[in-house]
Image (cartoon, rainbow over all chains, first blue to last red; front, side, top):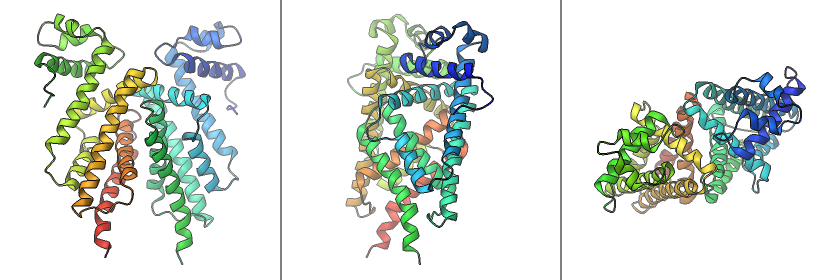
Length: 201
Length: 201
């Protein structure tokens, strides 16, 4: 699934980075720790990346590429099902351990944006890409006569706000009523987009 | 505004903590740095707190107390105006530097919850308090015949989700269209709560 302009070694370093982040978190992470998770020689990690942040910024580029590839893969599927899959990815009813790890990693890396413009730029790109994907699905569904949405851009921002908020609550305060209500609100938003169509003449 | 069971010295240490956090952020913060921001002897900070995290957890308790006191102070005001003030506090159109600092501090401290259960507990308490305050305003407005809200608990979670998401976007990716749309959605939510009343017989 990784992009063509990334070598196999680089893709393997990205996987090692994910595992090291999941175990240690951002603060305790080092290039040495990533080298330990990497199956080939750790010196290859040093060869490709100058610092922990250099590597993590590449990791975020990799996440954006993966998201884009995943989105392109599903291009022929029904827009409503794809929106519902997005809800299940971000706010599953029973998250797997792997998913919980991802939400934690995502939250920790995102917070680096508070003080580091390079992280801010990556998260802006990632969020923009997610909102664009939702916007595209809403437009496509509207063209196919499946959705009836007033303001597509606002609805896309609304759905992404609910999903990213719920995901962050799960990773931080773990307030379960908030996660449940946020998921229900996201589902309602999709229901409204679909059912409004049936009520118009 | 601080609670009675906190001494004047402790309240001053909390103010110094806020200033030190705003300048340095969580990772670079130390008890020594807080001592430098403190007007009295830095040794007093060490006398009251064992570690940086011990102090920061007290700081979060202080934030919950401040929020509660602020909420109690406005008890006699109109519920609709109070909800709109909350939107202005969390998502001002033009945030002051001081507010931007607060959003960054809030985001950095919240992320400590990913790995530290003591932070998680504080943020769960703070979020619960905020949602309770919004729920109370929605109920009060409903009793006074000003609001007509279907599900009060869900609407409260919805408003808080939009406000905290917008605040975090401002502190991290700084994606301005998202902040603008999120604020508009929060305002719409309040408008709907109010105007529905006029359309019922």
